[in-house]
Image 1 (cartoon, rainbow, N blue to C red):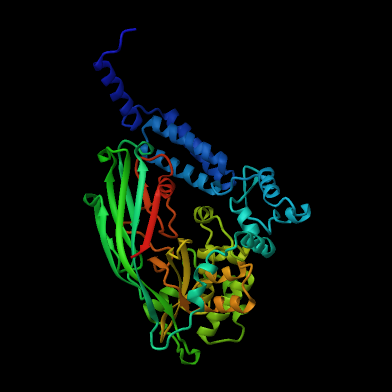
Image 2: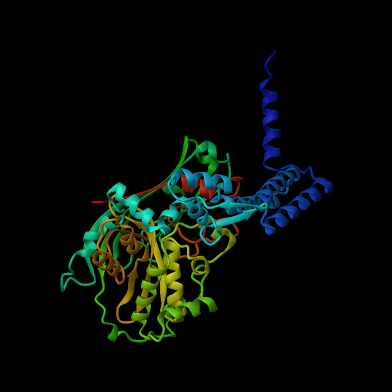
Length: 503
Protein backbone atom coordinates (compact mmCIF):
# COMPACT_ATOMS: atom_id res chain seq x y z
CA UNK A 1 0.00 0.00 0.00
CA UNK A 2 1.36 3.43 -0.93
CA UNK A 3 2.00 5.76 2.03
CA UNK A 4 -0.16 8.92 2.09
CA UNK A 5 1.50 12.12 1.05
CA UNK A 6 2.85 14.55 3.66
CA UNK A 7 0.44 17.17 2.32
CA UNK A 8 -2.54 14.89 2.95
CA UNK A 9 -1.35 14.12 6.47
CA UNK A 10 -1.05 17.83 7.26
CA UNK A 11 -4.60 18.46 6.01
CA UNK A 12 -5.94 15.60 8.18
CA UNK A 13 -4.11 16.87 11.26
CA UNK A 14 -5.34 20.43 10.73
CA UNK A 15 -8.94 19.31 10.38
CA UNK A 16 -8.64 17.10 13.47
CA UNK A 17 -7.18 19.97 15.48
CA UNK A 18 -9.98 22.31 14.46
CA UNK A 19 -12.64 19.79 15.37
CA UNK A 20 -10.96 18.98 18.70
CA UNK A 21 -10.75 22.57 19.83
CA UNK A 22 -14.31 23.24 18.76
CA UNK A 23 -13.28 26.04 16.37
CA UNK A 24 -15.74 24.95 13.75
CA UNK A 25 -18.84 26.85 12.79
CA UNK A 26 -20.78 23.64 12.22
CA UNK A 27 -23.72 23.91 14.61
CA UNK A 28 -27.22 22.67 14.12
CA UNK A 29 -30.24 23.63 16.25
CA UNK A 30 -31.04 19.96 16.73
CA UNK A 31 -27.55 19.12 18.02
CA UNK A 32 -27.56 22.08 20.39
CA UNK A 33 -30.99 21.10 21.65
CA UNK A 34 -29.85 17.53 22.25
CA UNK A 35 -26.92 18.77 24.33
CA UNK A 36 -29.16 20.99 26.43
CA UNK A 37 -31.55 18.11 27.09
CA UNK A 38 -28.68 15.83 28.09
CA UNK A 39 -27.27 18.47 30.43
CA UNK A 40 -30.68 18.96 32.02
CA UNK A 41 -30.97 15.18 32.52
CA UNK A 42 -27.50 15.15 34.10
CA UNK A 43 -28.46 17.95 36.49
CA UNK A 44 -31.64 16.09 37.44
CA UNK A 45 -29.74 12.86 38.05
CA UNK A 46 -27.27 14.68 40.29
CA UNK A 47 -30.08 16.23 42.34
CA UNK A 48 -31.65 12.77 42.71
CA UNK A 49 -28.37 11.32 44.11
CA UNK A 50 -27.77 9.31 40.95
CA UNK A 51 -24.14 10.41 40.82
CA UNK A 52 -22.76 7.68 38.58
CA UNK A 53 -25.55 8.16 36.06
CA UNK A 54 -25.05 11.91 36.26
CA UNK A 55 -21.34 11.54 35.48
CA UNK A 56 -22.14 9.55 32.34
CA UNK A 57 -24.75 12.07 31.23
CA UNK A 58 -22.44 15.04 31.84
CA UNK A 59 -19.79 13.31 29.75
CA UNK A 60 -22.29 12.77 26.95
CA UNK A 61 -23.37 16.41 27.16
CA UNK A 62 -19.73 17.49 26.95
CA UNK A 63 -19.24 15.55 23.72
CA UNK A 64 -22.45 16.94 22.26
CA UNK A 65 -21.48 20.51 23.11
CA UNK A 66 -18.01 20.00 21.64
CA UNK A 67 -19.62 18.79 18.44
CA UNK A 68 -21.59 22.04 18.24
CA UNK A 69 -18.54 24.17 19.05
CA UNK A 70 -19.99 25.50 22.32
CA UNK A 71 -16.84 25.48 24.42
CA UNK A 72 -18.37 27.35 27.38
CA UNK A 73 -21.24 24.90 27.78
CA UNK A 74 -18.82 22.00 27.29
CA UNK A 75 -16.79 23.26 30.25
CA UNK A 76 -19.97 23.40 32.36
CA UNK A 77 -20.60 19.75 31.50
CA UNK A 78 -17.01 18.79 32.40
CA UNK A 79 -17.35 20.51 35.76
CA UNK A 80 -20.62 18.69 36.39
CA UNK A 81 -18.98 15.36 35.61
CA UNK A 82 -16.07 16.09 37.96
CA UNK A 83 -18.43 17.03 40.79
CA UNK A 84 -20.44 13.85 40.25
CA UNK A 85 -17.31 11.72 40.29
CA UNK A 86 -16.05 13.43 43.44
CA UNK A 87 -19.28 12.58 45.26
CA UNK A 88 -18.57 8.84 45.06
CA UNK A 89 -14.78 8.73 44.60
CA UNK A 90 -14.23 7.94 48.30
CA UNK A 91 -16.95 5.26 48.40
CA UNK A 92 -15.62 2.25 46.46
CA UNK A 93 -17.45 -0.52 48.34
CA UNK A 94 -20.95 -1.89 47.97
CA UNK A 95 -22.34 -4.07 50.76
CA UNK A 96 -20.87 -7.29 49.35
CA UNK A 97 -17.40 -5.80 48.92
CA UNK A 98 -17.16 -4.12 52.33
CA UNK A 99 -18.51 -7.24 54.06
CA UNK A 100 -15.81 -9.31 52.38
CA UNK A 101 -13.13 -6.81 53.42
CA UNK A 102 -14.34 -6.88 57.04
CA UNK A 103 -14.46 -10.68 57.11
CA UNK A 104 -10.90 -10.85 55.80
CA UNK A 105 -9.57 -8.26 58.25
CA UNK A 106 -11.45 -9.49 61.34
CA UNK A 107 -11.94 -13.25 60.89
CA UNK A 108 -12.44 -14.02 64.58
CA UNK A 109 -15.09 -11.39 65.32
CA UNK A 110 -18.70 -12.59 65.79
CA UNK A 111 -20.99 -11.97 62.83
CA UNK A 112 -23.45 -9.82 64.78
CA UNK A 113 -20.68 -7.46 65.92
CA UNK A 114 -19.38 -7.13 62.38
CA UNK A 115 -22.88 -6.46 61.11
CA UNK A 116 -23.27 -3.64 63.65
CA UNK A 117 -20.29 -1.84 62.09
CA UNK A 118 -22.20 -1.37 58.84
CA UNK A 119 -25.33 0.22 60.23
CA UNK A 120 -25.97 3.84 59.16
CA UNK A 121 -25.08 4.97 62.70
CA UNK A 122 -21.74 3.16 62.74
CA UNK A 123 -20.48 3.66 59.18
CA UNK A 124 -20.17 6.40 56.61
CA UNK A 125 -22.32 5.71 53.57
CA UNK A 126 -23.61 7.41 50.47
CA UNK A 127 -26.52 6.50 48.24
CA UNK A 128 -25.89 6.59 44.50
CA UNK A 129 -28.21 5.24 41.82
CA UNK A 130 -30.21 3.40 44.46
CA UNK A 131 -27.20 1.53 45.88
CA UNK A 132 -25.59 2.10 49.27
CA UNK A 133 -21.84 2.67 48.96
CA UNK A 134 -19.39 2.53 51.86
CA UNK A 135 -16.48 4.85 52.64
CA UNK A 136 -12.94 3.78 51.78
CA UNK A 137 -11.82 4.40 55.38
CA UNK A 138 -14.36 2.00 56.90
CA UNK A 139 -11.79 -0.58 58.02
CA UNK A 140 -9.56 2.08 59.59
CA UNK A 141 -12.50 3.57 61.44
CA UNK A 142 -13.47 0.18 62.85
CA UNK A 143 -10.08 0.11 64.54
CA UNK A 144 -10.37 3.71 65.77
CA UNK A 145 -13.84 3.13 67.20
CA UNK A 146 -13.04 -0.17 68.94
CA UNK A 147 -10.29 0.22 71.57
CA UNK A 148 -9.84 -3.53 72.02
CA UNK A 149 -9.01 -3.95 68.32
CA UNK A 150 -6.86 -0.82 68.27
CA UNK A 151 -4.85 -1.85 71.34
CA UNK A 152 -4.32 -5.31 69.89
CA UNK A 153 -3.02 -3.75 66.66
CA UNK A 154 -0.59 -1.37 68.41
CA UNK A 155 0.55 -4.22 70.66
CA UNK A 156 1.34 -6.37 67.62
CA UNK A 157 3.35 -3.47 66.20
CA UNK A 158 4.98 -2.78 69.55
CA UNK A 159 4.54 0.93 68.83
CA UNK A 160 1.79 3.54 69.00
CA UNK A 161 2.18 6.07 66.22
CA UNK A 162 2.34 9.75 67.27
CA UNK A 163 2.00 9.01 70.99
CA UNK A 164 5.27 7.09 71.28
CA UNK A 165 7.00 9.46 68.87
CA UNK A 166 6.27 12.69 70.72
CA UNK A 167 5.58 11.71 74.33
CA UNK A 168 9.05 12.79 75.45
CA UNK A 169 8.17 16.35 74.46
CA UNK A 170 4.84 16.21 76.26
CA UNK A 171 6.35 14.68 79.42
CA UNK A 172 9.31 17.05 79.60
CA UNK A 173 9.19 19.52 82.45
CA UNK A 174 8.75 23.13 81.44
CA UNK A 175 11.80 25.23 82.24
CA UNK A 176 10.83 28.49 83.99
CA UNK A 177 11.85 31.63 82.17
CA UNK A 178 12.11 30.07 78.73
CA UNK A 179 9.02 31.90 77.52
CA UNK A 180 6.10 30.77 75.39
CA UNK A 181 8.13 29.89 72.29
CA UNK A 182 11.06 27.60 72.96
CA UNK A 183 13.16 24.70 71.62
CA UNK A 184 13.67 26.11 68.08
CA UNK A 185 14.23 23.74 65.17
CA UNK A 186 15.52 24.86 61.78
CA UNK A 187 13.63 23.17 58.96
CA UNK A 188 14.26 23.08 55.22
CA UNK A 189 11.68 21.80 52.81
CA UNK A 190 10.64 21.26 49.22
CA UNK A 191 7.31 21.00 47.49
CA UNK A 192 7.40 19.16 44.17
CA UNK A 193 4.68 18.80 41.55
CA UNK A 194 5.63 16.45 38.72
CA UNK A 195 2.86 15.41 36.31
CA UNK A 196 3.61 13.14 33.33
CA UNK A 197 3.25 15.20 30.17
CA UNK A 198 0.98 12.70 28.46
CA UNK A 199 -1.67 13.21 31.15
CA UNK A 200 -2.14 16.87 30.20
CA UNK A 201 -3.62 18.55 27.09
CA UNK A 202 -1.38 19.79 24.32
CA UNK A 203 -2.31 23.42 24.88
CA UNK A 204 -4.10 25.73 27.26
CA UNK A 205 -3.00 27.34 30.52
CA UNK A 206 -2.32 25.63 33.83
CA UNK A 207 -3.01 27.88 36.82
CA UNK A 208 -1.19 26.69 39.94
CA UNK A 209 -1.34 27.93 43.55
CA UNK A 210 1.62 26.30 45.34
CA UNK A 211 1.57 26.14 49.17
CA UNK A 212 4.32 27.79 51.24
CA UNK A 213 5.10 28.37 54.94
CA UNK A 214 3.90 31.56 56.63
CA UNK A 215 5.21 33.70 59.46
CA UNK A 216 3.46 33.01 62.78
CA UNK A 217 4.34 33.31 66.45
CA UNK A 218 5.72 29.77 66.41
CA UNK A 219 7.09 29.74 62.84
CA UNK A 220 9.62 32.44 62.04
CA UNK A 221 12.33 33.56 59.65
CA UNK A 222 10.53 32.07 56.66
CA UNK A 223 12.76 32.17 53.61
CA UNK A 224 11.68 31.13 50.12
CA UNK A 225 14.84 29.81 48.53
CA UNK A 226 13.41 29.19 45.07
CA UNK A 227 10.32 28.71 42.94
CA UNK A 228 10.77 26.92 39.62
CA UNK A 229 10.08 27.54 36.79
CA UNK A 230 10.56 31.15 37.91
CA UNK A 231 9.57 32.60 34.54
CA UNK A 232 5.95 31.52 35.07
CA UNK A 233 5.48 33.11 38.50
CA UNK A 234 2.68 35.68 38.20
CA UNK A 235 2.12 36.54 41.89
CA UNK A 236 5.32 36.32 43.99
CA UNK A 237 5.51 34.22 47.16
CA UNK A 238 3.25 35.47 49.97
CA UNK A 239 4.37 34.35 53.43
CA UNK A 240 3.21 37.10 55.80
CA UNK A 241 -0.58 36.79 55.49
CA UNK A 242 -3.07 34.13 56.49
CA UNK A 243 -1.97 31.62 53.85
CA UNK A 244 1.33 30.87 52.13
CA UNK A 245 0.99 30.80 48.35
CA UNK A 246 2.93 31.42 45.15
CA UNK A 247 0.86 31.63 41.96
CA UNK A 248 2.05 30.49 38.51
CA UNK A 249 0.52 30.31 35.04
CA UNK A 250 2.13 27.80 32.70
CA UNK A 251 1.31 27.62 28.96
CA UNK A 252 1.04 23.91 28.28
CA UNK A 253 2.39 24.27 24.77
CA UNK A 254 5.70 25.31 26.38
CA UNK A 255 5.98 22.04 28.33
CA UNK A 256 8.09 19.85 26.04
CA UNK A 257 9.79 17.50 28.49
CA UNK A 258 8.43 14.21 29.79
CA UNK A 259 6.95 15.85 32.89
CA UNK A 260 5.47 19.16 33.94
CA UNK A 261 7.68 20.07 36.91
CA UNK A 262 7.02 22.82 39.45
CA UNK A 263 8.92 23.09 42.71
CA UNK A 264 9.47 25.27 45.76
CA UNK A 265 12.30 25.32 48.30
CA UNK A 266 11.95 27.01 51.66
CA UNK A 267 13.40 27.33 55.14
CA UNK A 268 11.93 28.34 58.51
CA UNK A 269 12.44 28.03 62.26
CA UNK A 270 9.72 26.27 64.22
CA UNK A 271 9.19 26.51 67.98
CA UNK A 272 7.52 24.45 70.66
CA UNK A 273 4.69 26.40 72.31
CA UNK A 274 4.11 26.29 76.06
CA UNK A 275 1.52 28.70 77.40
CA UNK A 276 1.47 29.43 81.14
CA UNK A 277 -2.04 30.78 81.59
CA UNK A 278 -3.70 31.98 84.75
CA UNK A 279 -7.43 31.71 83.95
CA UNK A 280 -8.25 34.38 86.52
CA UNK A 281 -6.28 36.97 84.54
CA UNK A 282 -8.16 36.36 81.30
CA UNK A 283 -10.18 39.42 80.38
CA UNK A 284 -12.97 40.03 77.93
CA UNK A 285 -12.16 40.54 74.26
CA UNK A 286 -12.81 43.80 72.45
CA UNK A 287 -15.95 42.81 70.55
CA UNK A 288 -15.49 45.62 68.02
CA UNK A 289 -11.99 44.43 67.07
CA UNK A 290 -11.93 43.13 63.45
CA UNK A 291 -10.04 40.04 64.66
CA UNK A 292 -12.78 39.27 67.17
CA UNK A 293 -15.54 39.78 64.60
CA UNK A 294 -13.78 37.60 62.01
CA UNK A 295 -13.04 34.68 64.31
CA UNK A 296 -16.39 34.61 66.07
CA UNK A 297 -18.37 34.63 62.81
CA UNK A 298 -19.85 31.66 60.99
CA UNK A 299 -17.91 30.45 57.94
CA UNK A 300 -18.17 27.80 55.25
CA UNK A 301 -16.95 24.96 57.48
CA UNK A 302 -16.69 26.50 60.93
CA UNK A 303 -20.39 27.19 61.33
CA UNK A 304 -22.48 28.73 64.07
CA UNK A 305 -25.96 27.23 64.06
CA UNK A 306 -28.65 26.91 66.74
CA UNK A 307 -27.65 23.26 67.23
CA UNK A 308 -23.97 24.19 67.54
CA UNK A 309 -24.78 26.94 70.06
CA UNK A 310 -26.95 24.57 72.08
CA UNK A 311 -24.19 21.95 72.16
CA UNK A 312 -21.61 24.55 73.24
CA UNK A 313 -23.84 25.75 76.09
CA UNK A 314 -24.51 22.14 77.12
CA UNK A 315 -20.76 21.43 77.29
CA UNK A 316 -19.72 24.48 79.34
CA UNK A 317 -22.73 24.66 81.62
CA UNK A 318 -22.50 27.66 83.94
CA UNK A 319 -18.83 28.34 83.21
CA UNK A 320 -18.20 31.86 81.91
CA UNK A 321 -14.41 32.08 81.87
CA UNK A 322 -13.33 31.72 78.19
CA UNK A 323 -10.19 29.72 79.05
CA UNK A 324 -12.13 27.23 81.16
CA UNK A 325 -14.90 27.09 78.55
CA UNK A 326 -12.38 26.17 75.85
CA UNK A 327 -10.85 23.59 78.19
CA UNK A 328 -14.25 21.98 78.76
CA UNK A 329 -14.82 21.82 75.00
CA UNK A 330 -11.39 20.23 74.50
CA UNK A 331 -12.00 17.42 76.99
CA UNK A 332 -15.56 16.90 75.78
CA UNK A 333 -14.35 16.23 72.22
CA UNK A 334 -11.64 13.85 73.45
CA UNK A 335 -14.07 11.95 75.67
CA UNK A 336 -16.96 11.87 73.17
CA UNK A 337 -15.60 11.62 69.63
CA UNK A 338 -13.04 8.97 68.73
CA UNK A 339 -10.79 9.94 65.86
CA UNK A 340 -12.16 8.94 62.44
CA UNK A 341 -11.13 9.42 58.85
CA UNK A 342 -13.84 11.19 56.88
CA UNK A 343 -14.76 11.77 53.20
CA UNK A 344 -13.50 15.34 52.80
CA UNK A 345 -13.91 15.31 49.03
CA UNK A 346 -17.59 14.43 49.23
CA UNK A 347 -18.24 16.90 52.06
CA UNK A 348 -16.54 19.69 50.13
CA UNK A 349 -18.41 18.87 46.91
CA UNK A 350 -21.78 18.60 48.66
CA UNK A 351 -21.01 21.79 50.64
CA UNK A 352 -21.59 20.04 53.97
CA UNK A 353 -19.79 22.05 56.72
CA UNK A 354 -17.23 19.84 58.40
CA UNK A 355 -17.92 21.12 61.91
CA UNK A 356 -21.64 20.40 61.44
CA UNK A 357 -20.75 16.93 60.13
CA UNK A 358 -18.92 16.09 63.36
CA UNK A 359 -21.85 17.36 65.42
CA UNK A 360 -24.41 15.31 63.47
CA UNK A 361 -22.43 12.08 62.90
CA UNK A 362 -19.67 11.96 65.51
CA UNK A 363 -17.06 11.40 62.79
CA UNK A 364 -14.06 13.66 62.49
CA UNK A 365 -10.33 13.59 61.76
CA UNK A 366 -7.75 16.22 62.68
CA UNK A 367 -9.25 18.86 60.39
CA UNK A 368 -12.88 18.13 61.20
CA UNK A 369 -12.24 17.94 64.94
CA UNK A 370 -10.32 21.23 64.84
CA UNK A 371 -13.13 22.93 62.95
CA UNK A 372 -15.64 21.51 65.42
CA UNK A 373 -13.63 22.83 68.37
CA UNK A 374 -13.45 26.24 66.69
CA UNK A 375 -17.19 26.25 65.92
CA UNK A 376 -18.08 25.45 69.53
CA UNK A 377 -15.76 28.20 70.77
CA UNK A 378 -17.13 30.73 68.30
CA UNK A 379 -20.65 29.83 69.38
CA UNK A 380 -19.70 31.13 72.83
CA UNK A 381 -18.00 34.28 71.56
CA UNK A 382 -14.45 32.90 71.89
CA UNK A 383 -12.34 33.68 68.79
CA UNK A 384 -11.08 30.39 67.33
CA UNK A 385 -9.72 28.92 64.12
CA UNK A 386 -8.42 25.71 62.52
CA UNK A 387 -4.74 26.04 61.68
CA UNK A 388 -2.60 23.71 59.70
CA UNK A 389 -0.30 22.40 57.07
CA UNK A 390 1.93 19.45 57.96
CA UNK A 391 3.03 17.47 60.97
CA UNK A 392 6.79 16.86 61.06
CA UNK A 393 7.07 14.33 63.89
CA UNK A 394 9.97 12.09 62.82
CA UNK A 395 8.72 8.91 61.22
CA UNK A 396 5.05 9.89 61.22
CA UNK A 397 4.94 13.12 59.25
CA UNK A 398 1.98 14.05 57.08
CA UNK A 399 -0.72 16.61 56.45
CA UNK A 400 -2.31 17.82 59.66
CA UNK A 401 -4.60 20.40 61.26
CA UNK A 402 -5.07 21.60 64.80
CA UNK A 403 -6.98 24.45 66.48
CA UNK A 404 -6.25 27.75 68.20
CA UNK A 405 -8.37 29.98 70.40
CA UNK A 406 -7.64 33.59 71.29
CA UNK A 407 -7.23 35.05 74.75
CA UNK A 408 -6.87 38.80 75.11
CA UNK A 409 -3.75 38.74 77.31
CA UNK A 410 -2.05 35.74 75.71
CA UNK A 411 -2.80 35.65 71.98
CA UNK A 412 -3.47 32.50 69.98
CA UNK A 413 -3.40 29.41 72.19
CA UNK A 414 -2.90 26.01 70.45
CA UNK A 415 -5.07 22.91 70.88
CA UNK A 416 -4.49 19.53 69.21
CA UNK A 417 -7.35 17.17 70.00
CA UNK A 418 -6.20 14.55 67.50
CA UNK A 419 -2.63 14.06 68.68
CA UNK A 420 -3.93 14.07 72.25
CA UNK A 421 -6.28 11.20 71.43
CA UNK A 422 -3.38 8.98 70.35
CA UNK A 423 -2.62 8.41 74.04
CA UNK A 424 -5.80 6.35 74.06
CA UNK A 425 -4.46 4.20 71.23
CA UNK A 426 -1.47 3.05 73.26
CA UNK A 427 -1.47 -0.56 74.45
CA UNK A 428 0.98 0.07 77.30
CA UNK A 429 0.45 3.66 78.51
CA UNK A 430 -0.69 4.05 82.11
CA UNK A 431 -3.78 6.08 82.85
CA UNK A 432 -1.63 8.79 84.44
CA UNK A 433 0.52 8.94 81.30
CA UNK A 434 -2.54 9.20 79.09
CA UNK A 435 -3.92 12.10 81.10
CA UNK A 436 -0.59 13.92 81.23
CA UNK A 437 -0.12 13.55 77.47
CA UNK A 438 -3.63 14.74 76.66
CA UNK A 439 -3.36 17.67 79.07
CA UNK A 440 -0.18 18.83 77.31
CA UNK A 441 -2.01 19.39 74.01
CA UNK A 442 -4.36 21.94 75.53
CA UNK A 443 -2.33 25.15 75.56
CA UNK A 444 0.92 23.61 74.33
CA UNK A 445 2.20 22.29 71.01
CA UNK A 446 5.22 20.31 69.93
CA UNK A 447 7.73 21.97 67.55
CA UNK A 448 7.12 19.48 64.73
CA UNK A 449 4.85 21.69 62.61
CA UNK A 450 4.88 23.31 59.18
CA UNK A 451 2.16 25.99 59.06
CA UNK A 452 0.66 26.87 55.67
CA UNK A 453 -2.55 28.61 56.72
CA UNK A 454 -3.95 30.25 59.84
CA UNK A 455 -7.47 29.02 59.20
CA UNK A 456 -9.55 26.99 56.78
CA UNK A 457 -11.54 28.40 53.85
CA UNK A 458 -9.10 31.20 53.05
CA UNK A 459 -9.82 32.44 49.49
CA UNK A 460 -7.16 32.18 46.82
CA UNK A 461 -5.64 35.10 44.94
CA UNK A 462 -6.35 35.44 42.08
CA UNK A 463 -9.89 34.16 42.39
CA UNK A 464 -10.21 30.86 40.45
CA UNK A 465 -13.86 31.62 39.66
CA UNK A 466 -16.26 28.70 39.31
CA UNK A 467 -13.55 26.09 38.79
CA UNK A 468 -14.09 22.81 40.65
CA UNK A 469 -11.60 23.00 43.52
CA UNK A 470 -11.13 21.60 47.00
CA UNK A 471 -11.28 25.00 48.69
CA UNK A 472 -11.10 23.98 52.34
CA UNK A 473 -7.33 23.60 52.82
CA UNK A 474 -4.16 24.07 50.81
CA UNK A 475 -1.77 21.25 51.74
CA UNK A 476 -1.19 20.48 48.06
CA UNK A 477 -1.41 22.74 45.00
CA UNK A 478 -4.68 24.12 43.72
CA UNK A 479 -4.65 23.57 39.97
CA UNK A 480 -7.02 24.88 37.30
CA UNK A 481 -6.78 24.10 33.60
CA UNK A 482 -8.93 25.72 30.90
CA UNK A 483 -8.52 22.81 28.47
CA UNK A 484 -8.37 19.76 30.76
CA UNK A 485 -11.24 17.31 30.65
CA UNK A 486 -10.09 15.27 33.65
CA UNK A 487 -9.97 16.24 37.33
CA UNK A 488 -6.64 18.05 37.14
CA UNK A 489 -6.60 18.99 40.84
CA UNK A 490 -6.83 15.35 41.93
CA UNK A 491 -4.26 14.51 39.27
CA UNK A 492 -1.94 17.07 40.82
CA UNK A 493 -2.57 15.72 44.32
CA UNK A 494 -1.41 12.26 43.25
CA UNK A 495 1.78 13.71 41.76
CA UNK A 496 2.61 16.05 44.65
CA UNK A 497 5.30 15.49 47.28
CA UNK A 498 6.24 17.57 50.33
CA UNK A 499 9.52 16.86 52.10
CA UNK A 500 10.65 18.83 55.18
CA UNK A 501 13.77 17.88 57.11
CA UNK A 502 15.56 19.20 60.16
CA UNK A 503 18.85 20.98 59.36
